[in-house]
Length: 160
Image (cartoon, rainbow, N blue to C red; front, side, top):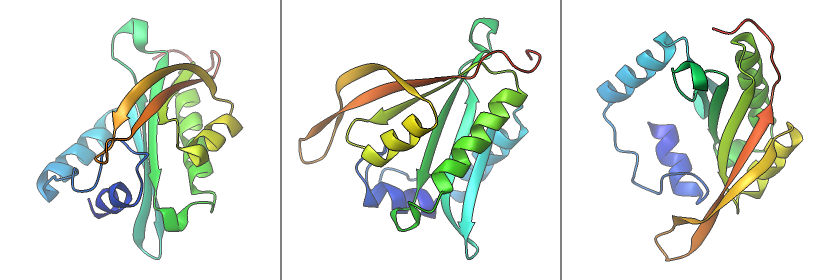
């Protein structure tokens, strides 16, 4: 909870703005336990000095057979801990998890102005597949586009 409140306050490129992550400890615990118990998703965290400084979630797009070859990823890292390789480690862990599940395609959406995110995703082989103009509107009235990106993983492990 504290991590999400910090990263939402320090950057404009995430889905939520300052003060928009208001969950109770009980609700967050139930959410995390649900994610960890679900074989269709995984959650990774990064700690520095015993403090969580980043998180990453990856999971199948849907449970129907038509969607089980696809997964989506979202990650965030505190600005003070960016450029330390945490995002790259999250990406590799998510890709490894996808391959172990037979997932063929990893997808994400990123704010067009999130240059570090775009560099990271491109480095890992994601390709731009589309753009949603003015998808994000900030408190100051400014807009940003969302960029859709996909990384083909190919057919790997037996399909679940």
